[in-house]
Image (tube, rainbow, N blue to C red):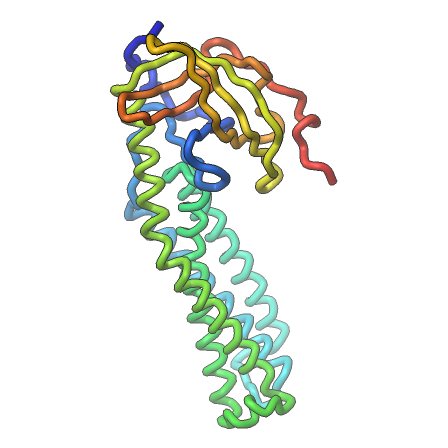
Length: 290
């Protein structure tokens, strides 16, 4: 039995839970989800503003940290405020920088529907901010000494310059890798969301059954399992091997009802059939061992 995908997919997304999510093509952080009724995502001005805030926060926090290191390692490195106030300011700025990165990550995951693209969107401004802040900190400390040779020779009191410079270089190299890969990650996430939206709109819907396999690994304490979904179509019975990413408390029981969305191009999207009633395995069964 088959039927066209009904408009019921355009449901409210306010309480929609994307876990468990399935993919017949991707694994790990590349598995992509799209809330019912939501259009494939693009990077919005609001996300760019959040990324800019993240960049500024990490620049300020790293610069403050470099200034603290400079004051602790060199008596010639002078700052306008006391060391205690400087340490306190660096801690506050570091906390705000972490909050900015977490907020950007949550926005990006909710919008892009993919952990990999979201993490790269966070890392790009974060690493850029660290690079700028550490480079500025090294320049500030170097300006106090005015002796590059002493830094290269490891003379005591020049550690701040060396540490800041190393941090700036490492962050810059990592940042270049991220920036090169970021456009491709964003395109992949959008293509996957476009496929899901197209199958929900134009694909054929088949009822299926879930067969759980072994846990491949845990990512951030969430299990990823090899699964198989079987379904019947006019062409006969089919089995689709896939990966399921979920949380320990949302592992559906073996034999749970599934929805298989497919088209003539061979594209397949798998979803748990929530309307059929879902029961989950005990949370402790799929919690990672200590």
